[in-house]
Image 1 (tube, rainbow, N blue to C red):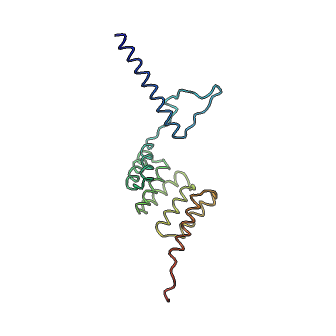
Image 2 (cartoon, rainbow, N blue to C red):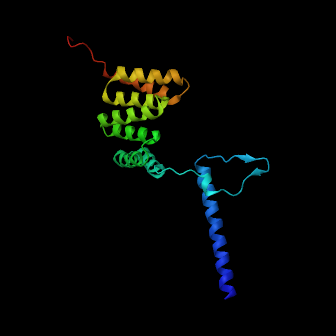
Image 3 (cartoon, rainbow, N blue to C red):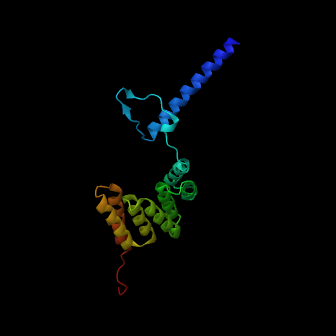
Length: 180
């Protein structure tokens, strides 16, 4: 009987240690830094220290599928995320970008509007709206959005790249006069 109890105690300690290692890896991957006390970092993390949002998993899956080019699946995950957490700006922006790639610009505009209501006109939203307008062929509107984003963050390489892409699009669609 003692051996069984000793074995169960060892198994529970091993399970607890394995769970701690997984939690630390997850926190490290999420770029979350715990505050350091004068005595050094706290080696034990309380469950109340980690914030969980209902939309975390759907947003993660939405981003994963978006980056893989599976825009239908990313739209589903982001839609689930905004239903679970209607104030999650990241989920709204992801939903809008997914709608853009599915060419559902009417729904993308609604999602961008909601993201702006929640978080204001951020550099990312302005850039994404510019890209959306560029996809639609509204190059003047796209330039306005890109330039507004660029004025807020002139060192942003993504915005600079999108402006270059826009400039290339302008050159590509120029046609010679019809009288030739």
